[in-house]
Image 1 (cartoon, one colour):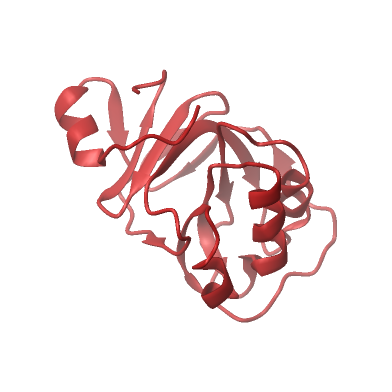
Image 2 (cartoon, one colour):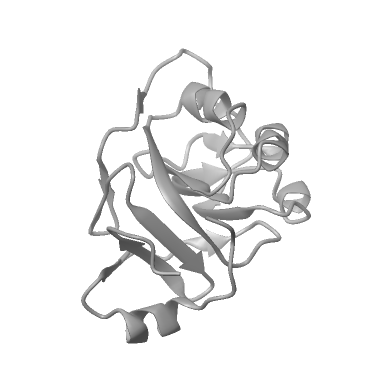
Length: 162
């Protein structure tokens, strides 16, 4: 799915029975302030091995949704991994956790939403689960569903809305 012009309020108005709203305040950090795509999930805690691995795969039309358990102790995304996501055409990433290198990430044509920042990187232990249902912000994120994100909020739908 190519990134298109939309706002989440308009999507809510146009599709009130098809969207679920994430009940969590996430901050936009990437240069792309609105982004959407098919959901790919990673569940991990203070180990971004799978996030780094996914950044090396083609992600055209996809958004990586990362359940990092809300940890504020380790950053699950930094500038080098974010640059690989851009290189491999991912639309964006949504992290229930923290990121770092925000000044560089702010210059990348890539959507990034996260709880906040922390300067400490993770240890790479190879832990985590790929493409499993994850739950945060009152929403179940299922691989293959669609996510829409902008400065107004984040929505999930079972099928494409654009």
